[in-house]
Image (cartoon, one colour):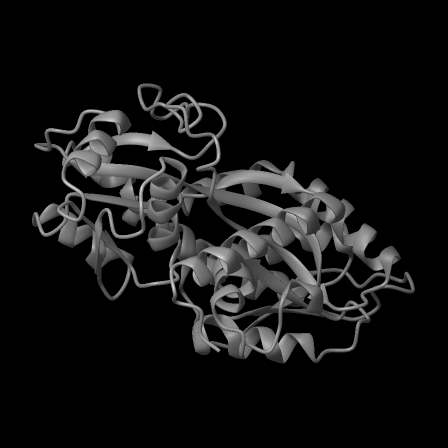
Length: 329
């Protein structure tokens, strides 16, 4: 997986550089010049890679070169606040991500924006979450784990990438859905997803919930056991891993996502044009292959569905941040 990611990123970088200078110029009223796509993180990361994959493939369908612009810092807040100040003319858009566009403002009232301050255009891909334990763990399924937590409240530990991360919220959503208190399991924070995974493998934590892409190598190598995934149906790659719905917890349905987002008051005609171009792009074999290489799964949502999903996500995580007493004002 890591080899594919590096190989995919190299191909994306080279192709993006070439595409910017070779894409044809459209004669249509919009767009009649290159479009900037802001990534609220540094170059080389998964969100940046996703943006460049889209930039390469969508140019033929939107009619202009797409230039990726990196603005990192502030958990995505710096780049997003920068992009939100753009004129709503469709020439500066954002690569949307659950971290910067939902989780950060949900737990930070001073973020400077909420979903009401931007225009969701289309979701392009998702990354489901997976609940895992070490291979030598006595917990064979979700019931085993929850029964152990109930029997020994405040004893079992879970690793996460910081309060407010999807790892942290995911476990607490499971505990809440199962009727367990916030302190029924001990949260062990680490600086980043890879370190929280390492904490599980070293035995410093009993369980961990993370993005599937972060766990694939460890599941395939037999170092960890997957207990449940947050998809509606079982994954083809892991047919033996049940969904949370099958385990009796359909509300534990969180997943990471990426997509295209514009500034507030973006005209409907531009939103619809982009949504159509995104759909056409997602049908391309090249796009599907590169998205798979970075560990994501294609998942299209149009403007209306995407807007509802983001609003629901934000409401859920804002309430959880309040309940868990991690809301920053």
